[in-house]
Length: 460
Image (cartoon, rainbow, N blue to C red; front, side):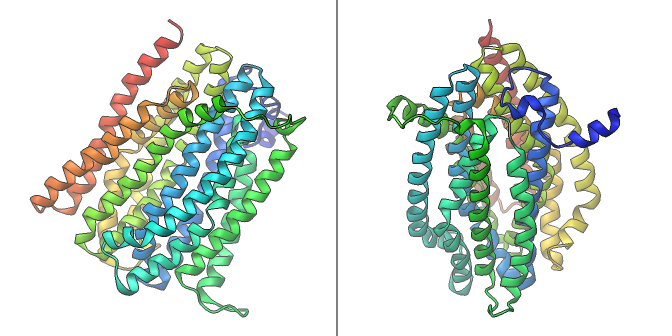
């Protein structure tokens, strides 16, 4: 029966994707089969973070603020691991599209070495820098100690974050997003149990506070990394692996492909740091509100993350195969789907925003401040999607250099200029939120123009 067939296949990879070839078949089906499992997975990843925020709020408003304070540093780890791993997806995808499996497998070898080196650097640098960064954001005394008790555990476990990201990047290059989805669903369930246990205590464990939340995260990342590596071993990508041959050209390609998205994501983390710095004079309740509201915002951006993964995977292979019409169709379809996601997201934010905030805190000041951010963010959801989709396009066609300049503009130069003016004139908090909207929409319009130009150059 056709209906039962569609139901059984919903959220699973079709035969074409299982074979790792995205240069054939319906692009619409490829987007669906890659984006849906990815979006479901990232939904549970966000709920993982939401659970952490929920339990931190149950400890105290200061604990909630401490967790929010560390988010920019935590995101820096994710930014570097995620940015460099996106380069892995693009490089392997292009090599597979060119039908050069030998080169794809050498890229796998080099990425394994890169991931270990990256994890060591992240742990050492982060542990040295974290106390100073927390103090810059105004943390001191018990507030500082609570923030450091969380972030230090995370930093010690950087190897697990990096390992999970790189393993998933290799799976993404062959269109497999189901493994990551399964890990994130299982991780969310286990995290809920461990957070409850470690925060409340019991069964021989004393209440650990926010440190317990971090410990639960590290345990789950380790298990997730092991699960993804197991799935990777089962894929055709690791079949008949050749001997490792050092190739400086691959290293150069890694840097060329990985550094721009890494810098882009790092500047996103820095952007959060800047926002936190400028809003912190409004009080701990505003810092806590920002931490809660961006978690809620992430829920409504989840489908766009699935689209980004699909665009990067499909564009990479079709660019390698020189199937430029399929590249253009992929981007056009993703942007069309984004409009629908935006409309649904705005409806839920404006209708249920206050209720969602109240799930995390009963503090009326936190709820009011967070609502201001959420209402502004709702109008910018599609702008974020346009930026992310076209960033994936540029990565897929191996032209990611613009990301650095766009991020400097969007995350650093303009926000500092706007926020400095707002601080000088003692502007109300809502103007800070709406200035963020103005910047992201400006970036989205520019990206549309630039991406259109690059698509024309692909096949003049």
